[in-house]
Image 1 (cartoon, rainbow, N blue to C red):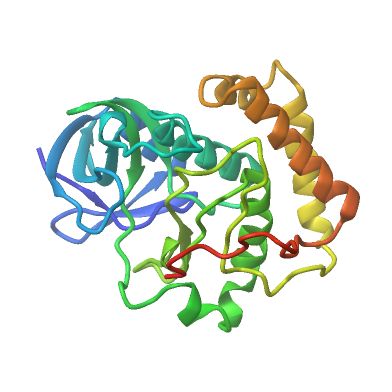
Image 2 (cartoon, helix red, strand yellow):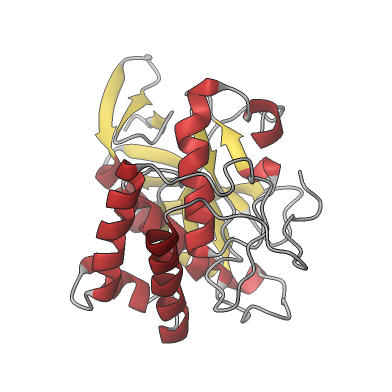
Length: 265
């Protein structure tokens, strides 16, 4: 059986077989492979705060590269419950997907070779490119504006420059969402250039739909988040979304707060 490796993870992603003949795969198919496929470790990824493994996930003739972060490899943090970072990684994708903004690579929570963990599609990228090198590139203004709103919603405590990847497909991706969704305000990000600007009408429409689904306990979104976040964290998520809808402006740094991550890259 031929292995076919993913290049990108857009709504319709190109998959290349060894003979370089492209086929099309949807985001839903990527999620199916990540959820049901056989995981094979390729090695430990360097420079990670927690154990992260490059793996391949094979299912129904497709083999996708992915990043596997097992729960038991998480280092304890004083302000986040141990063992929940992989759940938060998955919840970030669920929120991004629901918004339709496609900021976060497809991510699932599942059993792997080292127990339960998050499995996220690996994005081939240029290591020399990150937020600070692309922030003035007009091609990425939509992504960055959406990401600034997204990081407020999920309460991202660690939006470093290097957590924005420029993929080989020449689009940006947002990764590393293990310390998000805290009930207390913890937003730390390098993306502040849109502060206090009006939120685009289209983004407000997306936020309104997200808010509606979050409040509907019967929605697929709410049911998914019930498995990943605590009731208090879900309530705080709803409240932050409501704040954006009421203020209708991009978030701004708060006085007497640590507004930037360290290190920034």
